[in-house]
Length: 171
Image 1: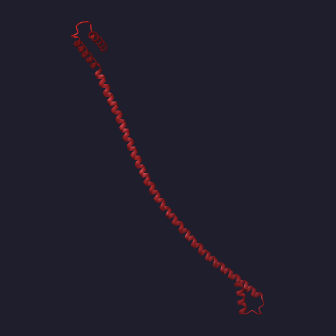
Image 2: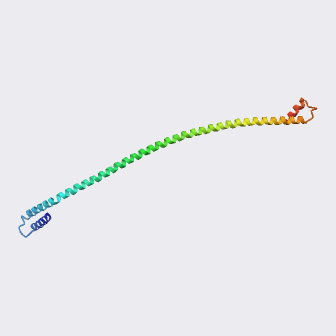
Image 3: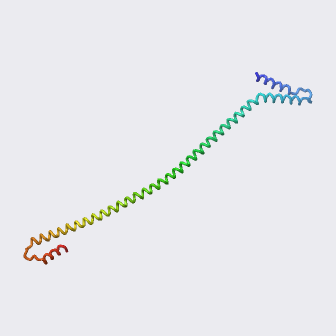
């Protein structure tokens, strides 16, 4: 209903504002009055929706800006967490590297000690084997010499002959 009244006022304003060949002196006065009435009617009907539209628009822009700010703050916090994790990871990597170097040195020292011990054992075994082989060889020489002496004629068996036989076998 208010729209119909508004439409009629607008049409009447246009009709009253038109020039009809009458006096020109008061024409500006009626035009001004018509404009003020028209502007008042427009203001009455348009002002409240325009205010609510613009305040709602401002509120929505403000909300969107706040959301963007929140996301920005979240991404900054996530970036800081990621940088902290990177620093922690680098520190952990250094610690692991140092521990690995220490462990490597310990293992290397253990292996060297084992090798030295095995070399000593092998050296002792070789000395023992040489002594064993030497005794074995002496036994064989003595056995061979005794067998030779026993198989020979006992006539010329004196100390000098025995020394000669032993010297022949040893040399």
